[in-house]
Length: 162
Image (cartoon, rainbow, N blue to C red; front, top):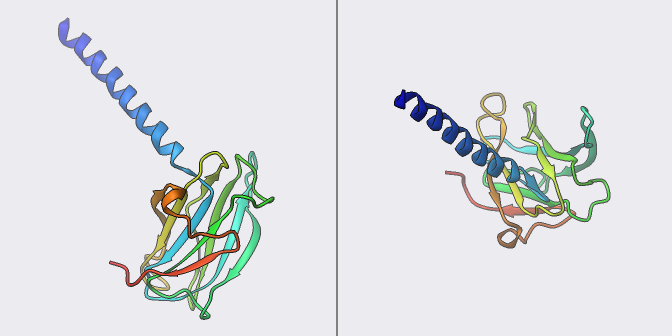
């Protein structure tokens, strides 16, 4: 009888731990800044900013950013601060859609937009123009450590990817 009670408490404890973990993860899915770093052996020609309004299922184009130089090369990143943009309301989702030179177009992971949840979601692309080039979330930073991002977009040369 005693082992069954221990098992029930163990499962309850596991559910509490998992629940707390999910709460932290979902809270970190809110940001006001998006950043994309190119770690691939290709160039990124165009970065499209898209939004999915709260309660909607489709994505709409907000703005196209044509990369400098004229491309976003390996080791370079692009960042945009969405706070202050009239197009984004709390509860909307935001994402980048990257057009790879001589390759395909990839949707980046989406991020929940929230003015009260200031932070930066950093995505990274790798691989070749046709293989393993997904655009996935790599980190989350508070905006205090990520202040160089501007509403009109900011380019950074971060050096080669590891």
